[in-house]
Length: 98
Image (cartoon, rainbow, N blue to C red):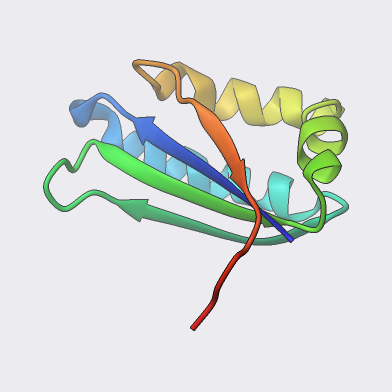
């Protein structure tokens, strides 16, 4: 299992619009081969910052499968215009779970 991590900086006056778009976009990503789980959380101290965590079966399911798909183009069109700056996406493999 690979955990994708991204901090999404959304212009504060567009948070509601972003959340609506993301609610639609989650059906795109969740239908992708290798997708396992997704969590989107909103910052308490910084309400315009969201934490996106996505679990993938493999790194390639995300980097090649999803990002190389036509569905990713729809995902981009729905969401990428909300980010300033554009997020850095990182991947993690599990070490310990409680």
